[in-house]
Length: 105
Image 1 (cartoon, rainbow, N blue to C red):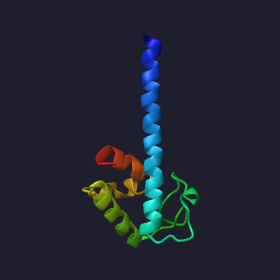
Image 2: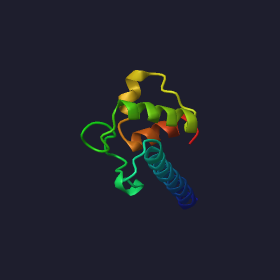
Image 3: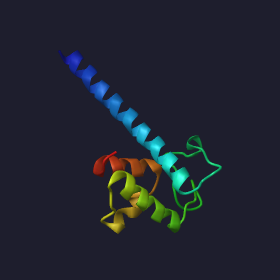
């Protein structure tokens, strides 16, 4: 019986990982389209790299506004606490985690 439970838990975890990876890919595609990142492909974007600053994608405050619109339009999420913005907007993965926890992914 324990073996069946572990298989079920593994299957659920595997499904959640696939869903997260699908969401990360979708976010990459949305950022490329909405921010007009024409010479970048989803494979070029490291899900854990910073979105802003000199590292990672090097996005700016105008791009942050576009990301806010993506979250609102596609996932029904409004950033209620601006102090959390830096944490939420750190990387593609942190955006995906926030969407999974708070939106309709």
